[in-house]
Image: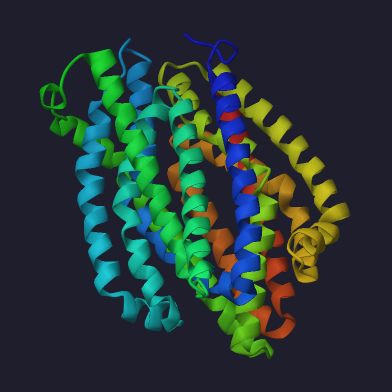
Length: 443
């Protein structure tokens, strides 16, 4: 049995972290560029389409990526050569779903924009966004395979390529608009998102083809087709994950759409409400999530590690990974909290030219210890087959946030929502720790 010490988690985490940090640095300056180019209201409009993207990803890709990673990792524990069949099984389901989703969003852009998002100006953005969904589905399934085989460098490189091409596309298109005397619209940012997905998908597909030629020495048609048993195993993991993610993203979508509406009840006009929402979600939140590149990298690689050790009965390796995760992610969160609380106002004013962003960064800094820890604890629980518990705990915390949106925001403004974020993140961290403590106590 493998132990944690000789497992490639550290190397994989290092690769993902370095590329993730570089990607986030690029993304960070990209956000600053967008905020200067399109203003606070433009950022608010851009953030309003995020729920549609999240729901589409949950429905077509997220559950299948995790299931593929878990199946490949479990098979790798008992076989020398990782199987490609889980990936092809996932693609055969994920791609048709994504194409259907693409068509629904493209042809139903007006009803979605006017009825669900409650902002008709997002219709053209939704049409552009719809083409990124099939690309993301392919990209995610391929990444699930490489995460399961511990080849973290390929997903990391595709993430970096996606970010670079996204920024490059937006910069070139906006520069062309200015050269022609035109003012670029926020739709340019959505175009960049789709172009980034296209390039990352092409890179991932090329990487898979290389692995087939190198490891299997077989053309794609000669690879054994996924069996009905494999489909049952894949769907038994993917469907609950998909349902869970879908419900959670629906709740998050209600939250996202409701914030500007509740801010209008507080007394803001439409422009001010969108501007405040844009500053919070488009400037302050990405800044707080910036150090999450490390914990996200750990989380992605913890899932196959925990799954593999749990499958072969190595409970001690699971215990060690959990204890180290809690220790180091908690320490990192405390350090980041200190930095954000002390320098948040300066960062918002200097980087985004927005004192409001500085206020948000300072306040949100207090969620860091739990925010970074929750990411990795969730991955550990998924590796232990506790997806149902994760779902229930996340629903509880989202309902708590929604309560603050509907009852606190109309009375206290955006400050009421910040209170809800703090309370829900604290609650989620405690629930995760209690669940893991009970599991480890029994083993």
